[in-house]
Length: 262
Image 1 (cartoon, rainbow, N blue to C red):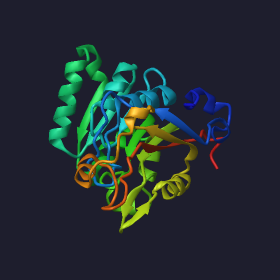
Image 2: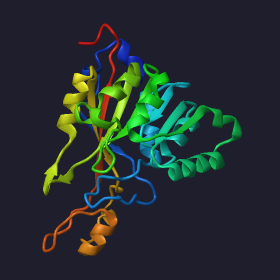
Image 3: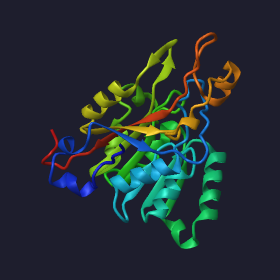
Image 4: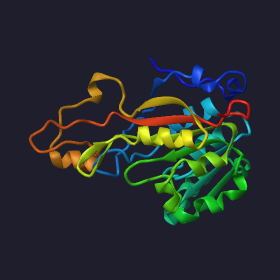
């Protein structure tokens, strides 16, 4: 069974922590499987389906969406298609140009003023977004082995504090993450991110299991060779059956209104 968060409007009348299911499964697959850019399989681009589901669940018409580390046009395109304004940040100039070209091709000219694509060094990201503090209805951030939430040295203290400052009351922060290898061991960043979010004054709403592979028998072929596993983001070691990364984790937080803040 799949579920999604209730509309943002409910937050003003009911405690978010009591409304959202602690865990839900979203089908976010597309016709092709996104290839991970790291051996751990956690650095996978956001699919258009996941972007649209987050935007529909967490925002209203005309709201502002911020994509902190845009790696594809998915969030920008989804926001424009659903009538939202969007600001996307990237640290790769070539990628920024590719994203803008894709958006320009697939969206009518009258939609383009709703998109703001920004290129900045990681340590300058929040300086560049300072004028948007307290205005975002949804922030999409990645926290994987190669794409930490930007912020320079502050990231070592609290990776969620700066994104939280960009949210308006009732706004949502979606952190896309997943289990990964660190120092030769499996590492789950979720507990630390939840702790940091609470320190930043956010409410932990939901853990979303975002499926990357279609839920059908033919989507799980026989274990590939180790060379194929590394090339496709599958995990495993020689002599041990290879495991296929079937999902990413999305941690959803909300910024309470004044009377709900603790």
